[in-house]
Amino acid sequence: MINVIICDDQDVVCQGLNAILSTSDAIKVAAIANNGLEALEYAQKHQPDVVMMDLKMPIMNGIQATKAIKEQLPEIKILILTTYDADAWLFDAIRNGADGYLLKDTSREALIEAIEAIAAGKTPVDPKVAGKLFQQLSKVALPGDTTLGRDLSNREREVLRLISHGMTNAEIAGQLYLSEGTIRNYVSGILEKLDVEDRTQAAVLALRHGLVD
Image: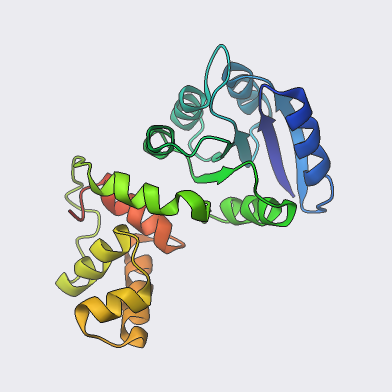
């Protein structure tokens, strides 16, 4: 069972999300919070698997709450669910520890799938903002990790760099003059060496730790 806390300052949104999640036998709503401070308090009390976090809220916004929860309870996954697709909100959320980012027009089925995916270690990102995520992160130089990714070959680093720019396997294959199957093999090796579940997670990790430029 995936235990979830819903955090949104609009009661009608909380009620709607609660109704949606109640249709899944795999998900249980542990608590509903109306601001970031309540989300932090409920996270400490219930220690859920996932917190669904809005961004613009009173008392403590979603960015501040995400940072606080991740500092105190890093094992909890934070899924941002918001109407805001602006670069600043998106980048700040990821930088402060968000594990996924969806917009509120996400379908019921996609929302439930995203919660299951994030609980399993994946990184769901709304297609409408994925391109912005890669573009924004690629502009930012962050401190490197001297050990992370040290087993990557030069070719794997090049593939990872192109992944971090939002390119598909087919686009990477064309860029490097290799077959798409070869690129798939490189991607699989990169995910294994970085110990991540998907290419979005690999790109975020690489950009956070300066593995690519």
